[in-house]
Image (cartoon, rainbow, N blue to C red; front, side, top):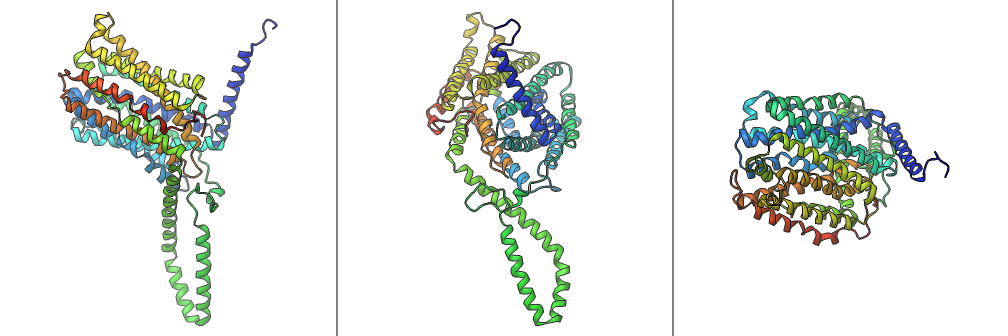
Length: 513
């Protein structure tokens, strides 16, 4: 090889970068450059919410004086809107606003995610009331979840349009934006918690939803294609929700023939019918529009049912759901333990979240670099064994064994946070890719949201299980005697999903649909 010539590795790397750039340019051509900006902004905002939600944790613990189980209960309720994402997908897919199915819902969602933080920042009474705070946090998550559904639907449309040729790159870009937002939110939150009041933190967070609201006006949404308005073939169940046009035409023909026969019988009758028809036409048009929406909703639910019957869909989704429900979530309890027993300051916990987001980015990179073509069962087995080992580190921390070995609490917390987020991302990435590839035309938002809602609903139930376990073991603020037993139970439960790996298709990988 002549000196100065690029190596084979460099040429391969350059070719891969050029391929990714071509893919992003194709996306920009399909949706406009503002689409990529909006995708990154929405995912960045989702990551940056750690800036505000860390303050919420301290609000519940220090101001409202809630127990660990009560705080976890509040979080479970507040994040419930993420568990019903298919509902937002069905509505956005089937009921367009002003002829558009995406941007108007993005605007509505952004308003819902903006206003609650503004109110909580300005009104101390609502902020210091447990139930009022829970309601506003739930509404905020409703808007954020709806925006996530709509942008995911747009991503799914892009992946289907490009035949998923760069699905991993697009998903990686989204998650990288979220991770970057999480890092920024945690770093700024670390400073804000020690220098700024919680109310001010809530108000500062409204800046991003405001920018997102302005950015929605920059996106040019393509009108529905004519193919989406036609009646789908009878031998296919993956239709777009407008399958009744032929029936409408035949009904119109029958009605016209009946009217013609009546006009032949009597001219007076014809005049009366014409007048009555003119008066009732607006009502019939509105009625037909409502019936069209109703049929679209019915067909979307039917298509969703047909898609869910496919083993390649319902088996992984069932496993993913059970993987969360069978493992109690004790994250809020650990937050109380770290702040009250270990006396870890807010600035350090912000640092640990930054490390966690870095771990998420590392997990994304590792998946795309090494695990794209690996058997899905092997990935999930590796992930759960790794999570069990990391949870054992929590047992070492709570039992104080790390002190006897000269390992500080901060090192244990930072290392566990980074590794846990990296391994969780390895488990989650394949489902993001599969969900984008399996979305049928016309219900992208619905099916993609169903994939994500399985994860979110499982997390919610897992949080309820964790809160129930903490309450059963009498783990309270300042009383952590049974926390070690609770973590031991958690370690055992982590292996339950491993026994259910038969639900995952045998030959499935992160890039096969």
